[in-house]
Amino acid sequence: MDKFRIRGGMPLSGELPVSGSKNAALPALAASLLTAEPVILRRVPQVRDIATMLKLLEYNGAEVERRADGSVRIEARRIVNPEAPYDIVKTMRASSLVLGPLAARAGRARVSVPGGCSIGARPINLHINGLEHLGAVVHQEHGYIEAVAERGLRGNTVHFERITVTGTEDLMMAAALAEGLTVLENAAREPEVVDLAVLLRKMGARIGGEGTSRIEIEGVKQLHGAEHEIIPDRIEAGTLLIAGVMTNSPVTVTGCVPEHLQALLVKLRQAGARVEESATAVRTEPVARLRSVDMTTEEHPGFATDLQAQFMALMTTAAGISFITENIFENRFMHVPELARMGANIRIEGRQAIVAGPSELTGAPVMCSDLRASASLVLAALVARGESVLDRVYHMDRGYERIEEKLRAAGASIERIE
Ligand code: EPU
Figure 1 (spheres, protein in one colour):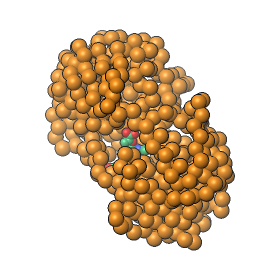
Figure 2: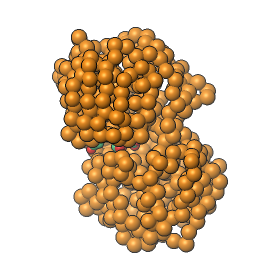
Figure 3: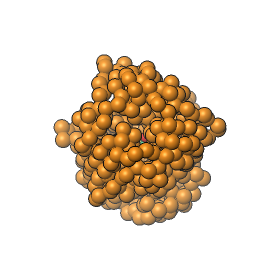
Figure 4: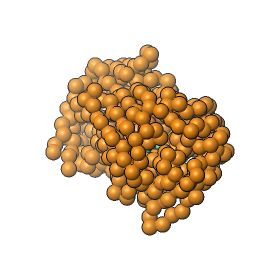
């Protein structure tokens, strides 16, 4: 199992380039199951979750070609196995994204029920409920959800009980091939949802309202092939920007969409950071000191839960008390005990973490528990005095492309130990 060895206290400088978005690429890949023609996706990050999704598409019967330039070509002429098996779903919950496309294209989908994971229960009841509204007959047996729609899906109004990102995406894909009009109410407004709508439109789908909480989809009989470039990863961009702010370094995060980062930028400015946006980059400059600010995670355009752990790492170095409230997942504080091992002063009360800073962090051996928790430990290690060794870096590899190379190129002392 790989580890990261990080020696803290090295200033960063220069550029930190952003890769394509993992969470936009995953639904885009699933969407390729909706057509028999080739779909070509550019700027697909080379991370483990993407490799897992490609494996799943191959299992479903698609031909997958990964190209050296970072693009992927998928051709799903026929659906052979309309199923997401346990072995794949257990390593990546986003596998449930194939439920809608398979039910719509093959009339049948069988997906292993995702169990709990380190950040919470991760149920898919809202995906299932939505598909039932589109006429699928769904039942659960032997740990699998089976959705059957022999004569195809029919459009309907689906009101999501709570906002779900992949649930919205799953239903958008199913509705694209359903007969008649589907209206998704209380839909997610994340940039990744918008990116999927853009791709589906290129494939011939009739879809509108993405980016608002009401999405309308008029089903079509068939979709066709398309080419599409995945949007930049806003969570990676935010993580790299926090790395710059936390190490108090002049760095520019390049190839991103600053508009997608507004909730973070507001908080960083409130904390006293100097951040400047241009069209496709955000620059940060050193400041005398940071002050604590409170933060609450919300659905987009609120503060992303996927940046909560990284922001908490930052707050351990700011002066004062910060109340951090996690509203999206019930158990997303696994990084807290590890940050505490590095000297952070954090107390958890229910959905709230109370961070008292500034703490002088010191290097320590720590354990990564999930993707974003790992990112917060990397950030803490970059400023901690002395050496940290991060175990179970495979969590990080699920979603960050060549993170250690990017940070090292900007001056960090970080190496992967195999
Ligand atoms: N929920 C339900 N029932 C459902 C679906 C969701 O109760 O059927 C609940 C969840 O338990 C959670 C809340 O609704 O409490 C929101 O979950 P959502 O469905 O929006 O999460 P997701 O679609 O499974 C995506 C991202 C996550 C990100 C969340 C929230 C992908 C592949 N994953 O997950 O990304 O945290 O939205 O923004 O897009 C990550 O990249 O580290 C990551 C976990």
